[in-house]
Length: 454
Ligand code: MV4
Image (tube, protein in one colour):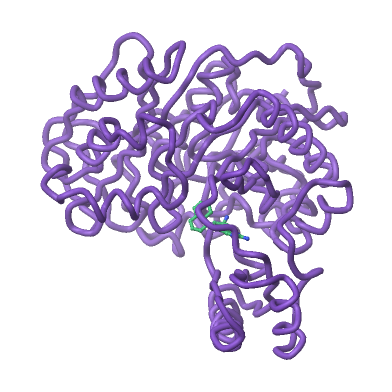
């Protein structure tokens, strides 16, 4: 069995991993930056090693220092969490070379799925529906315009090295296409060092629905249902829920089968996510695969009762999944609100600083995953998410009412947070009716006076 795990992350996910390891009797090593000395995961892990300066580039992204810490402390495995090095194929490869288990899929899989065009092609070959578009990357303008015309406007131009909404441009006609094609290539070259782009039909106001996958190293691939992640602002998710209020049992069944097919085509191992866009008519299209544990994984945990981080550790240890698809049942409705240290009334400007009073809600059907506490200082160097509120119950209405109740109990003094915004959304008729698409947040801000979430 894995005896000791290095946690190559910080914040709430580092704490989440410490907790799962402790319950499995696995020792933990925290690595941390100079800005995270007073962080909870550093205090709660069995051991801790400082790996560098406050900026991510000087610590949490320094693969060599993390591997060195792993060697010094003699760990068996590294859990990368999300963000940072979690989808870095080179880092996973380094771990493999050093005989340290990378808790995630094989480096080859990360590399393949990291190229969004290769990922699409891989799943398309086994019959998974994909968005109509170019066959792979398109390297010259005249060819690109022809393809765009053939697809029919509007089209979207995506970086093969992109993902999560980075490096995308929309074009409505030949003239704007010629411009956006070059903008997209230049941006992609700058951001990813890879200017390759591919073209797709632009789906208007889709829902973003992703399926949680769990796969062992013996070829068993299961899905744990979907999460509706349509409520986003500038490609940052704000609220996730499961089940999706939009999916019918039939649609869910078909999408779940294709999600498993997609993961099998990638010879997937460990926890992963298959992302789909779903249009108003219920047509669905694979867009990307995420090869990491995601921020919103607790939604699935509360619906299914399965501890995903523990499963990741067991699978990484070479164990067979102890259950089958038919054993997975969906008993609850769960909603997650991301609590960010940002001011929603001032264009979400970050609000780092020292928390005065911190009081987290509790009670029946309430879970809080957070590393925050009274007196904790949020450093300005990292992502502004300081916690997740997950509320669950037997139906959607219960989950919404419980979320509203818990948000009212949640006290975080001294900084601005997204709590007031979440309260406004939980009482918004469009959300309550389950009608939110990816266009929801923009519409919400256009019709909601700022003082309703201050
Ligand atoms: C799209 C799309 C419309 N048509 N692809 C954004 C995140 C990335 N994973 C894919 N994204 C989109 N791809 C086609 N062919 C619209 C989006 C999109 C979006 C997707 C999910 C959630 C929020 C979004 C907000 C704007 C655009």
